[in-house]
Image 1 (cartoon, rainbow, N blue to C red):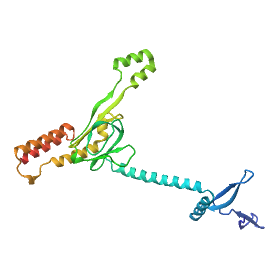
Image 2 (image 1 turned 90 degrees about the horizontal axis):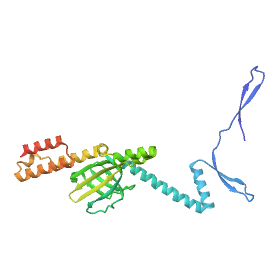
Image 3 (image 1 turned 135 degrees about the horizontal axis):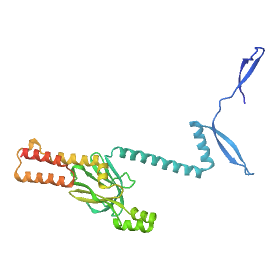
Image 4 (image 1 turned 180 degrees about the vertical axis):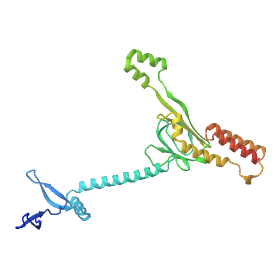
Amino acid sequence: MSTHAAPQRSGDGSRPVIASVPPTPVVKTNEIRRSSLGSFKIVERFPLTDDGWARAWRALVSLEPTTAEQALVALARRAEEDSGFRERMDLDARSLGYLPEVIFIGGYLTGADLTAGHAYELRFLTDRLSVFPRGSLQALAEFSYADLEAVEVAGPGRVRKWSPGQQAMLAAAFGYTGALVAYGSTRIKTFVRTQTADSELYFLHTSLLPEDLRIQLSRGLGAVREANASSTAPEGSQGHQGPASFVDELSRLAGLLDSGLLTREEFEHLKARLIAGS
């Protein structure tokens, strides 16, 4: 292996001193074979360049076609996973609110089947509410915000298997272990109900209390309210409304208020506009 040398003068200037310069290392990947005696030896080297990797792959295909086939399958699977990951990241970015795990407990839906007791994902996208199987990017059902008549978040919240008196008795009788059993049996039950003209679905959420869940979904619930307010707001071009039309619109607004899709302030504002337009 050759080295480059540069002459330098010694301290007293009498004669030059040769300082060796190490060569630039060449990183390579190797093809290694086991000899008949069980030892390994390098039979070919490949530089870590595009051409080197291509030559190494051709060598692998010629020597171990089965291993090469397995590598191709693994690479295809990884590419598919990377693509799905990017699609999920894009879906997350477009979601105003997201519940990664809710249990479908009942209801009806035209045109799609949800299985009671199975977990699903609920996503409030920019213009619709979508129901996905867990881990899937293909929605089972989608509802335009303007078509949603109700989205309710309610429930008992914290549910105890034992009454407060029973919890205290267990803690007193069995000490720390009894307290763990008594107070650890508390569960969260929050129900999410959605309704359209041709569906009514009930889901169970067990991670957040109703008030906390409403906060987490506030952007999505707000988008539903805005869509419903726009669809029910009377337009100036409609002119005078008859008594039946006025009553129908007022009843619809009251229903939106009861279902939580309109706040009291929004209801009063739309009612005033309705009265003024009549």
